[in-house]
Image (cartoon, rainbow, N blue to C red; front, side):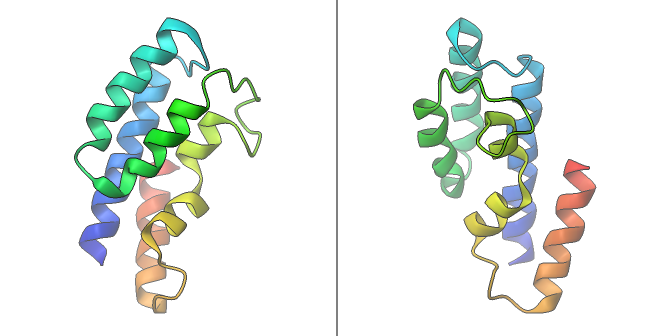
Length: 107
């Protein structure tokens, strides 16, 4: 499970960095270029396909970055990745590892 956590969180961080590199677009050509690059990153891990649909369906999502429904929050929220990995019912060691890994990458 730790290898899976490492892979998903590392690629999730790549997605967030990609979004930042494109200046956090929400629509237009910059957004399309970002989604194109993001899909290339997500192809490496089928678990991240959740984000493909989210990105394709959220062009024009102009919510402020820290809003719960914003693109930035979707790509940086610990709970999103925990649900994606399905670790809610894992033992404390796995959850602690997830927390440590997430904090080291995203904070």
